[in-house]
Length: 480
Image (cartoon, rainbow, N blue to C red; front, side):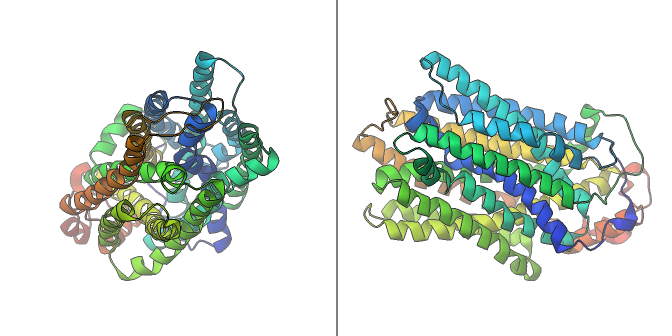
């Protein structure tokens, strides 16, 4: 179902209760997403016993496969017609399979090496497909709740302030809870912990379903045509810029977050208790960053904020390279500062995605929210895939030895140096590239231009590409 929006409710004020309800859906998503970014690589190499090379290849292959399902799921969601809307039904239907998949991927079977590889791939594929089936509609839901720029920025700020609750469960809480639930058997403990967290995630999605409402609705219905919608999407030059931006930023994020436990364990020589400080601090300071960015974005251009935020994330991250291993508190403070900056990236990123969606409709005359969001998540997952693969391949390149019978192996000095390089230099370079790219490609959907686009959409006026009258104020200010 792709087309024009109902103008009467695009700028309706959204209640705090509904914004909280929407945010709970992302908290549920982050139980899986954050654990995959921060814990899963460590789980596979140091607990499950996969070699880093096999792990890296699996991450890339499965996540690439999953990424290509995103546009399909987006098109399916766009063409869904129910009394609950286009996107909300999937929060209800997929919530239980989503929880089950979370449990299975953190299960260590009593198989030989080949059997364990097959089990890991199978359960990882299942989890990523369930994540896609529920997360694409969830992310699309934001643009269906409101089309007003300030309301959308507020909605996204609530979302990214609440999301770290799920992130805390999937990262900071998992290792301490695992040790508590099953002392001496971390594999069994992690499975029990993820059983609890999977159930909580299911309830969070149901809460999101119950307390949200789809207001921005297409006027006319059309048959699903994925190829047509992809062609429409590619015409959106602002989306094309964001696609590359999303990819490079996520590669940076995944490498830094995925390497933090290796850094704490092998460079700082600390155990799960200190690692939990880093992971819990990630939750708290990411939440702080997502909240504090709202007043900054009200005062300053969010495009410029995004540019300089990513450059600072890169430059400051290089400082880890000179922090001595016994100065773990200094390393913790620096990491928490970086997580606050990364937390600010979330609302800015998704607000720009919504702006690009509105711009795409204004330019082409068709609203393909599900496809737009799915395509953005495709680039995000591509970044996650490449970032995860680089972790595995990088560790293999520097000679990292996986656990034997669940017990970590002492690493060589070359491997330790490699861990530090992967953790510091790789993401720093990519964050800087991300900021510079957004600057030189001139992403130009400023608040004033977006307001004019929304005004045109409310009055049924579009870019002259489709032969409709267009407001000159927008045509003069927005590059079509």
